[in-house]
Image (cartoon, rainbow, N blue to C red; front, side, top):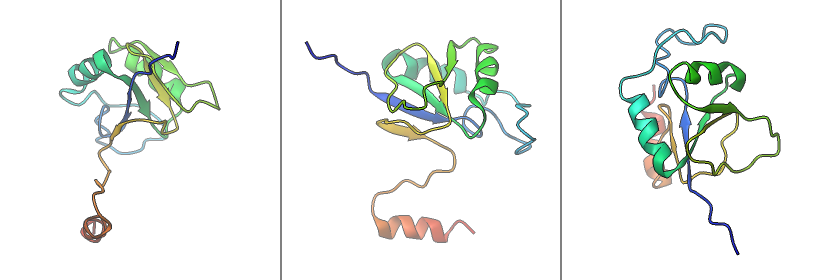
Length: 123
C-alpha cells in the first residue's frame, strides 16, 4: 500500500506572520502577528502540511507560535526534505518541497521577461 502524502505549503515568518515593523533586531521577535495570519494559517493547516521557513533559529520561533495557540515544532532533522503532517507547524531554516510558498519578498515567476521587468522595478 502506497502512502498518500499531504501537499505542503511553505510560509515565510517575517513580514508574513510576524509584523517585522522594526526590521532585524539581533534575533529578537518583538512584534505581533499580522492581521489575518492566525486565521489563515489555521485554515491552511486543515488541508495542507504547513511549514514556516525563516532565517531565524527555529527554536526561537516555536515558543512565539505556541504563545499564540499553535502546535509547532522545530526542525531537528538536517536531512529533512518533506513535511507532510497536518495540524502541526514545522519551523525550519530550509525551503522544503512544497506546492507553493507564501513570502512577502517573492517575485512571482511566469516568464523570464516578466521576472526581469519585476527585478528592474525593485529600485
